[in-house]
Image (cartoon, rainbow, N blue to C red; front, side, top):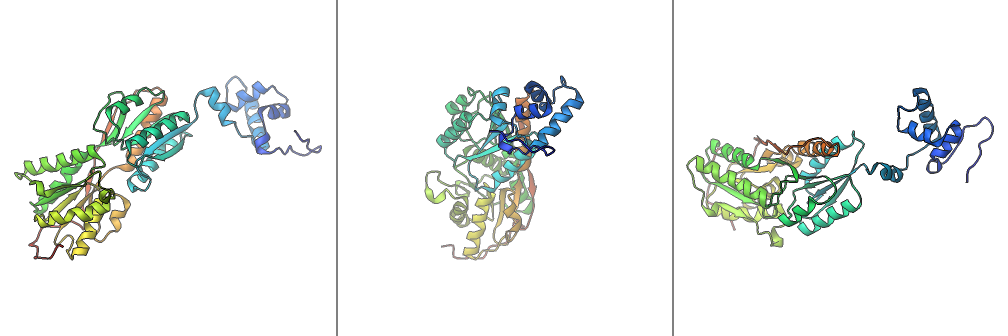
Length: 362
């Protein structure tokens, strides 16, 4: 039901009730002319376009997103799937995605897979049914068959730091060089004089763990050292006691200390935080008794005591690069996979080794 404004007064129409037909009547033109003017069509003169667009603003017109998506076959939405919204690593990745999506007038829907490949598939399927224009998947753990199924979806998909052991050529990806990151960490410790260097890995991210372990071993081997198995710890993936990275670091550093390591390279900063907490419980000084290197450079690391030496992953750039690739795919422009370079940030948790006094570790 339409209301008529008093003579001389501007029309006051509720924002949700204003239609193209309302604007057409107010402007004295056809609805098709209004539609073209609102789309900035060059078929309508600049003066008429400006008049209709100004009138639309004054009347409080809001475009019907559903109707527009039916016309353009686009919803102007992107799905972003992360393993956990509680992981600070993914907060920075998501910020990077939004920095590129926002100027392109795209909205980002965030969903969590909880490190469960089956849940990840379900979330991707839901986003696809919601008709998002593209899907970004961070730290995917899906197998080859599931990844292959993604290529059959009628929507562009980009993997960010994929942790799937399988590789599908038809899927685009952006990642950080994990082997190089591990080499930077271990080489830093070697240059400080450490030789007994341990490693704590993460079972929930198998591909990243494998590549960081490769970098750890190859760097020690190049320096002439062969680390024994007792220096290399991996949290059991099916043990609920180790699903929390901090708890894994707390538990797994003890056998490394008993094995005589003077430094520990950790799979990520949360594991390193657990190692730091365990050292406090045991009365060990960091870096005096044990040097610790993390991985990721989450914001927390700067505020620990001591601040954590860590491998910086360009998290914002990961998000920006993935979203830029998505825009290229949506624009039907050529896209190439990208591998970004990590850097080492030396802080207060690493120093030259010193003779460790005998202390009770139990």
